[in-house]
Image (cartoon, rainbow, N blue to C red):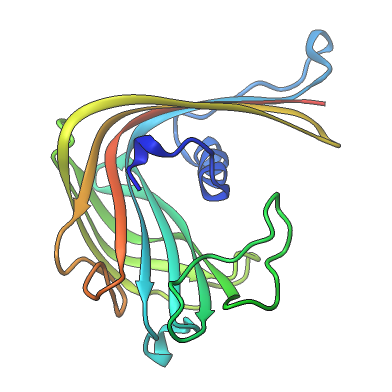
Length: 238
């Protein structure tokens, strides 16, 4: 699906917005004051980024610690300058019955995935940092990421694996701009966000890979990418 056709904000997008807000040098946090006693936080950030989402079909080698026969992933890279980068993402490992087109099972609205059905969620792995080198040009025509990633369960323990990564993005088409914004209300208060992006859709080059997983090298696999710059802001009021 084309990035500009996505109307709803996915859970991974929300995770990205929240992570960006605490991971970039441009972060600004305003503490509550008597005049703003109802504000829990306000933050904003900006930077240059490359991202990719993908579906990998088939079982991976046991050493990859990736159960299942379908793997839905996302990876976000924020440029920190001088070849450094903040890297984060997730992979959902799924087992689908023979002959079933892989899909990511879920209950919706944050509910647990159903335990039965033709595709079953086996687990989630999280990418959180690593030892990487990142380059991206100012015209958003190409970007590269090499090194190793830190992959774990997301519970704060030592990463379970450090797969090598080698990804090259190539910009496709004209530069465009888009804005995502929304408001969510729950028992903790009201959360508002805005995310502005200017850049290009992109394609990952043949041979790009994370560990034993090679992007788009088998039938039924696909990926979506883009490179560009962003601005984001978040506010939560109790």
